[in-house]
Amino acid sequence: MAKIFCVANQKGGVGKTTTTVNLAAGLANVGQRVLLVDLDPQGNATMGSGVDKRQLTATVYDVLLESATVAEARVQADRCGYDVLGANRELAGAEVELVDLERREKRLKDALAVVDAEYDFVLIDCPPSLSMLTLNGLCSAHGVIVPMQCEYFALEGLSDLVNTIKQVHANLNPELQVIGLLRVMFDPRITLQQQVSDQLKAHFGPKVFDTVIPRNVRLAEAPSYGLPGVVFDPAARGSQAFIEFAREMVARVQKI
Image 1 (spheres, rainbow, N blue to C red):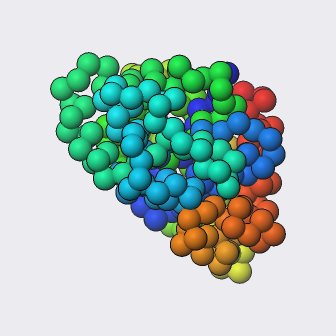
Image 2: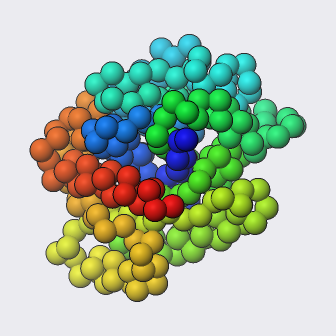
C-alpha cells in the first residue's frame, strides 16, 4: 500500500517543488516505487522532472474532472526513475469547475486509490495557498512534509499551516498528520538560522527531520536543466542530503 504525502507550506518560495522532485528522485535512488503528483498550475514539478507540460495529452486536471484515470494520465520521468502525474495551466480552471461537483475535495483520493498497489510512495506538490487543489491533496494524504527555511517569518507561516492541517484532520481526513519539518536552504554560518532551527527542535522535537538540506548552488541550477538535483549532480552536497532524507523517510514510514 502506498504512503501518500503532501509537500505543503502556505508560504511561497520555501522550496516545496525542489523538495518534492528531489525527494522523489532520492526515493527512486534507494529502490522505492514513486508517483509524483503535481497539483500546482505552474507545473514546475512536472518540468523539473524532465517532462514537458505542453506535450501532455492528459494531466491531473483530467483526473480531477474524471475524464481520465491516473493510469491514463501519468507519464514516466525516464531519467529520474519515477512516474509523474503532471500539471499545466489548465489546472487553474479546475478551482472554479470543482466548486459545483460532488465529492469535490475527495476526487484525487478516489483516483489514487485505484493505483495504490503500484507504488510505495506518492508525493503531492501543493500550490502555496489553501485552495481546492491543496484541499484535494490534504484529503488524499497520510501526512504532510513541511519544508521550512529557518527564518522568522517562516515560523509565523508554520502556525497557519498547522491550524489548517488540524481543521482538515477534524473534518475531512482523520488520518492526516504532520509527518515532519524539513529544514531547507540552511546556512549554519547565519546565527538567526541556527536560532530558528533550535526553536523548531525545542517546540516540535522528533517531528523535525534529522536531515538538513544545505543551501546549494547545484540544487538551484538543476531546474534550468529540467532535472532534480539528485539526477543532475548526484555528488553535490544538496543531492547527497536529499538521498539521506529519502532514507530517513523510508525509516520513518516503517514506524508509522
